[in-house]
Length: 44
Image 1 (cartoon, rainbow, N blue to C red):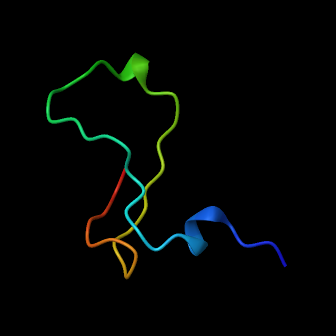
Image 2: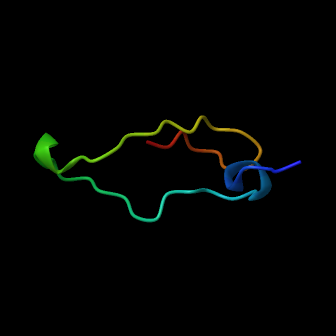
């Protein structure tokens, strides 16, 4: 069986955070990762 990377890594996935707005044209992909045992934060 092949396990996805997200299910095998028990840590937050976000590489970088931004608090300033940016133009939507720079968004290539959005993924929502709910909080859980791997990370206390919901991540986008």
